[in-house]
Image 1 (cartoon, rainbow, N blue to C red):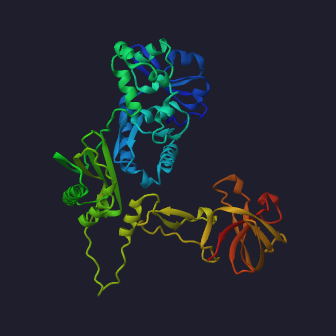
Image 2: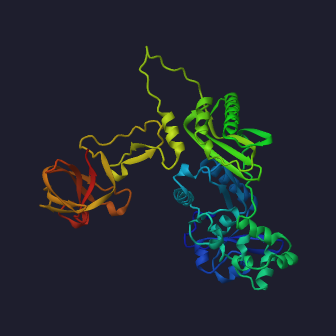
Image 3: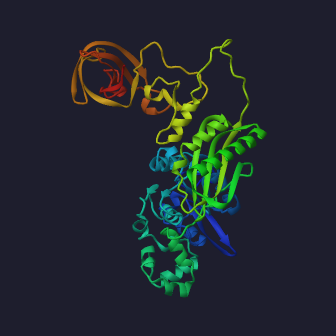
Length: 488
């Protein structure tokens, strides 16, 4: 939750107040307010009486819903073809056909939560077999990310509170009066008496949570989305039939994109099955394209992943991300040197999943681990270069690794060093190259320095090592030695 006033101290408790008629209650509270004992649902008058100097702002449901819609459209473009809002504060996604593009479920969830945190928003994310289970776990646990293995839903939700079932408040209150406290208590009770007293809603929500009945997601779609569809009077299921109609949809999509002068960067194929469930496939490209043959190939390579079940009654192909595409005349080999286009290879590798395709580019920083950044493989050159007056290793370690060194301080290179349990005698050395800390980044680097040496052992292997500090003043560093890179 963002603060209403940036001038407020981080320790100032703040709550959002919702109202219905004359009733006013706490709809949301920041961490400072929660630490003081305030809770969501607490009457506003009680919260104000408990905490002196409490900042209260009125809820704006219309603005909240509009913001949630924008976040949902962003998630549609970034994470999954099947995304919709889960009001008042959630987004639900079917990531079965797209999580591999994020490196798997673990990386997808951690990346999602971190991106929200980077914007000052607290978020929790859960993956489960059903919408109901994921909804409950994300709201009823304190973990930022949680992944429930297939078939483990019943065990995971057994101890969750009744409020996680998405039941009306009145029904939850009545169930608590009868002695029910958790989902497991309710699930172990015979269904007929509950239905007779409360109606079918309890049974329906339990079945949705445990995945016994389908709860289809109606995907959100922006107004200007380029989408083509094909409905079938008789369900289809044969791979060759699916491939035929996917090829036709790709052709239709490319024609629509051509009318608008656009090329597709990310396309989603959504398969609507007769059992009211959805499957999805996502294909991305490194640059805008509307090449019918190439887009067809990207989907054809993955059609075997489609499980038609009892049949498919509709196919939808959507250009989730489309960008302007200008036709450019190809260069003649007689006039200009031809440049090999590697974007088809990037597309093939990127759509296989399990890995992120990037290019390494320099950053204007003398500190080695900060002098590298990952950029898109087809991004333009950024103009920065690495220092050329001293050699740099072909492989920079993710983090400097501590080594044991025998050396004469302050300026002499090591005589020998031990790295990963192996002692190496130094035959040749060059240095030191002194690198100063970036004092404008953090105060701890005001006087910090590193002295780097290029050393070669008696086996001919070359390493990039450094001493933390100038070798004299301990304020400049610990004088410990580290190995930071390896030369080819």
